[in-house]
Length: 314
Picture 1 (cartoon, rainbow, N blue to C red):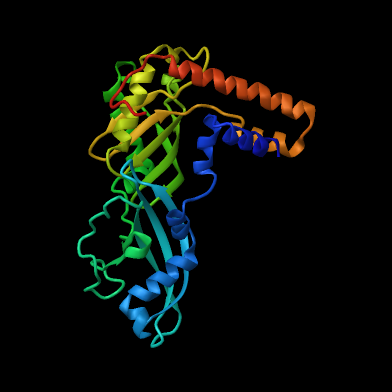
Picture 2 (cartoon, rainbow, N blue to C red):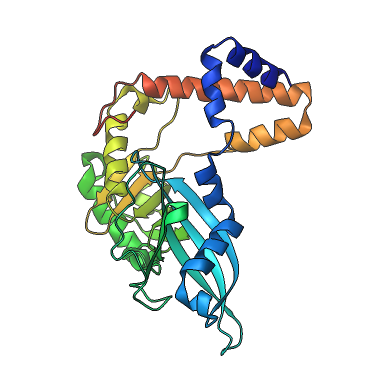
């Protein structure tokens, strides 16, 4: 109630808070795209197979909708449940949508009508009243590096060779055993693995990493992340007196794989927040306050590190 009253008073007085009313609710064009029943009805009016009854659109679910860039276009994915009366059971069809804000030229997606049969890769459909273009979501492709990254012997050799080549301090690195664990994997987009490493007994105690995190991404995200981490590692943050950052160990361009040292953890800030808000005791809130201050100190150290890499983004 107090927040609402403050905004009302600010708006009446013409203060800066009046600008916040512009984001108090979704604009009509964006709200329409977020309501599956509206999108479903529009698709049923525009797709010939639904109009003729050859196919029946049973449901439409929005999986995600995100701002793509500063052009004013949004990208989304819708999952359609489609029945073919000639067959038994419904199939799921994933549609990729591009939503253009009013006044923004619609994105080119090839042919704007639908000369192709619904469901084939070349199919396109334009829905002008929603400012949306639709196409079939391409099937996920397997990231090329994942088979080697998840194999114990191949990953052992890959880690040893790439880390030794990346840094003089690791030139003598020799891994006796590597145990990979897949932490997350989104086919065609990204994968994250943890490696538990063991070294020969005569090489113990050298401070080599016992746990390494491997990440592979589609495109150049991994290389950008690695070079950014290198810039941070060459800043005062590497000392770790305020915040501990992960040491970048290697990047393999051909496989688009980044290796970094693991940072030990007990809890994450999100878990502390949920626990404190659920508990509500003064002790829990004091603990939350302490860790939020610690996180703030780490962020302040990051932004004052003077590390510089790549394009400036505001």
